[in-house]
Image 1 (cartoon, rainbow, N blue to C red):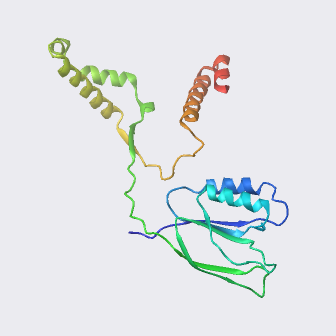
Image 2 (image 1 turned 180 degrees about the vertical axis):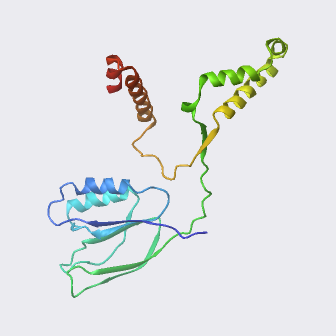
Image 3 (image 1 turned 30 degrees about the vertical axis):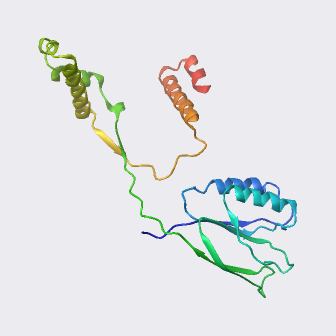
Length: 224
């Protein structure tokens, strides 16, 4: 077992008009990975809980499965302006203490974090660097490694297929060895869907084609 790591977001919203506060908070919360780790969002929100803006705020936080800790007034005016929202953890012993040096009160609480099993290290991937492959060298290696035409023609279909496949694999591995690539430690950007990734790949291919040919038609395709 290993200690649980947590995500923490500290918020300050200036008093007055909220402007784009909810949109910016939405973007911030979306940046935290939903990997099961506890998330704590707290700070001076400066939003009166009896105002319509508070309803919108709570709806936004609830959409991220964040629950608000119930407290007494956290400001000298008797309002609850300092809020705490948590996810995937247990909270207890919430205490609000007035301060002589601030109009905001000191809020403290105990938080119990779950323990998580130590994750198995991610495995890397292996691939051939085909950009360094010489077609002529590959042809020569395959031609010299395969059985003669007379011998190859005497083999049954399955044996001939296996022989060809193993020869191709052996020659490719000898000329263009497998190289390892470390596993990705973070998930890909959520906005980069399979469709966008496919279009991006096609665009990069068209761009490389234009860089070689300088053909206006290829340039138009790469721009579009």
